[in-house]
Length: 137
Image (cartoon, rainbow, N blue to C red; front, side, top):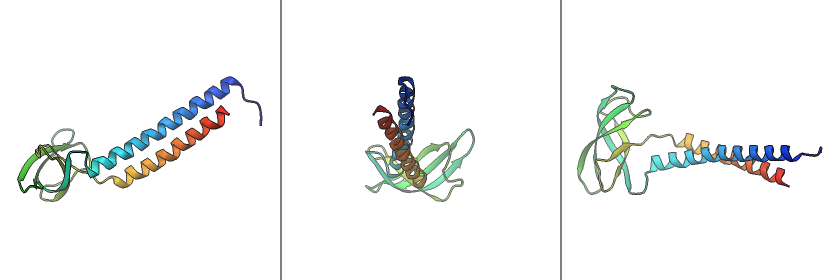
């Protein structure tokens, strides 16, 4: 194996750090997608009916109707840039703030992509760490 100069070692370690951070970014995106689907702390998840869809503008506004865990019927508006139902009348998975049910959002089912991205991110990050360890020695 040829000798490695100090500058080459620093560049290799820097590259390993960049690869590790890139992989960790995908892990964070995977965790965020998981939380987005299953709900954040203080949220309740469930199902609702899409009452109206408004596609004017850059995203889509929805009016959803659902029943809270304590039996209240709530009609509330929410917004998505992409990935929601395209017509009114269907059902949608929702998550709402337990203390303020009018703060509702439609859950998108992108779990497979999030989990796959997280796993790929772990693999990339592990390779980055391995490169750093190999170059430090």
